[in-house]
Image 1 (cartoon, rainbow, N blue to C red):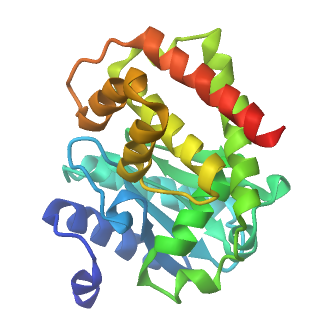
Image 2: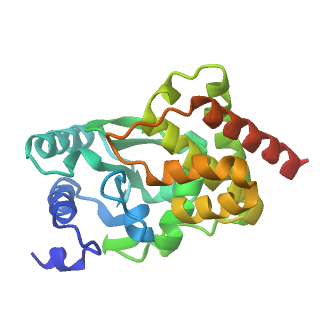
Image 3: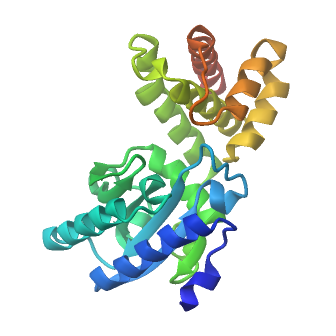
Length: 261
């Protein structure tokens, strides 16, 4: 297919899953606008042992219920296909209006989720950060350039969004550590704290490896080893550093308070 040559990834299995998704979305969506790749694949830091395949499908209008049901059936076919990367596809089907600028009153979008589930998800303030990386790094597999579909996002917008994510999502884990019991989530938490710290300081969003290297220098030796382990973690490996992860979350909350004081 002509589309196959446009995929900017050296991973045949990823390309195959994207090809099936793109073909299916075009077939189902009469108001299809574009299909975009973002995240680590677009940013050049994809790690097969840990990364998701982040995408965004843009539609002319919000989707009716029968179309959402058709997308759910497409998702089911992908899950039954045996394709290696089918359950690592993650992303929304979002209207042009909702994509243009984040609106919490227009933030319910049908989505593929990492792990192989489908549903209509509410997108929180972290979508501001994802929109920024999509606008700055997103690659069009079909449709117009992505920067024409998203308004510019300013440094202070990113700082507010990062602070919101930190307080709304991560601060409660200091009291309820259920999610942080897994090695995967500990590694994810560490690298997310690095990214939040970087954004609060610089006013931009960086890929996890870039933000982690910045944090290793900025935070010093006490946390450098924890960050190094999180950077090298892959699915199936152990990571048992809960207390240090909680300390890093507390430190990031403190830095956030100081930066907004």
